[in-house]
Amino acid sequence: MLLAFIYSMVLIKTSLLGLGVVSIVLSVAFIVALRLNLPALPVNAKSKFIKSFKFVLFAHLLGYSLLVSKLLLIDGWQDVPMFIASHLIMHHIWSGLIAAILTLTTILKYQTFIAKPKTAKST
Image 1: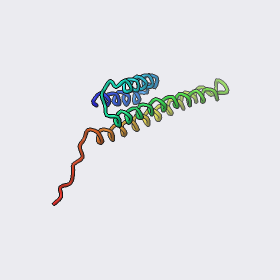
Image 2: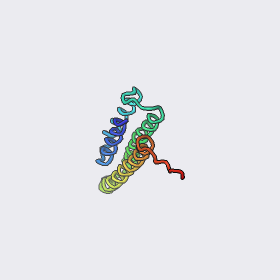
Image 3: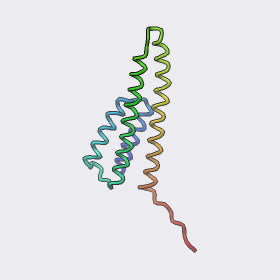
């Protein structure tokens, strides 16, 4: 189970650093590793981790498709500086959002699978 959490932490870090292509490659590798049952996990834990890694994969692919669509809308050289500036802003917001969502889902998985909820004592 620890290895799956390390996978999540690596994806959080690469997303925060803005390494979209690295995040895409790693998320595919982590999905394949989980499907090959490299860290032995319960079925429900494995499906939740795979769902998170698929989110990272498709969110980064969506970010790149938005970038390509913006690139196709450039009319001339006068639009290039605005394209670069808007891409940098969009890139930072998008990467931070992906990392934040993955962080929250990883914390929720930790609370569900690792941290034992304390039961209330009945009197």
